[in-house]
Length: 173
Image 1 (cartoon, rainbow, N blue to C red):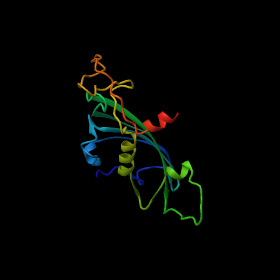
Image 2: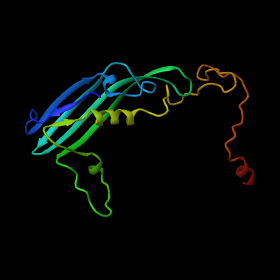
Image 3: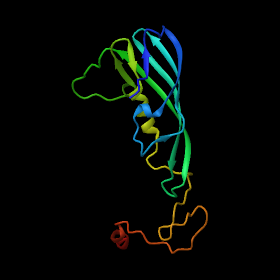
Image 4: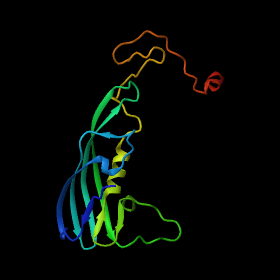
């Protein structure tokens, strides 16, 4: 996996900016699910306050996929926000029960003078990518009987009744 490193020796107290372009193949995505058009672009604002580093910004990428309903090839641009906080040291384990806050979820810990962000970027991209890819919101898909693309025209095939497993409950009501 590619290393997207923040060298803390180069980050001065206060705010600074970091832009980058990563080749998607370096982040080891599953090829059958994700194919990219071009690189993954990042624009980050880094804020350093002592041992605390805040990373805010966004990453953008263009992906190729087949529509889950009509199977047509599609392209879509994704833009995802990043908001992470890094603290020097290791997490303190709490005994007993405690509530997890939004701040807990966006806080990571680092040792040394380098923060590796490749894994975080990979996770953000994987979570932003939809499980069901659609070419458009109202895609009608393909006819179950003849395979006609129902976005182009209606085929006239009778609608098959789908057995949902709840048929018996419908009869009771």
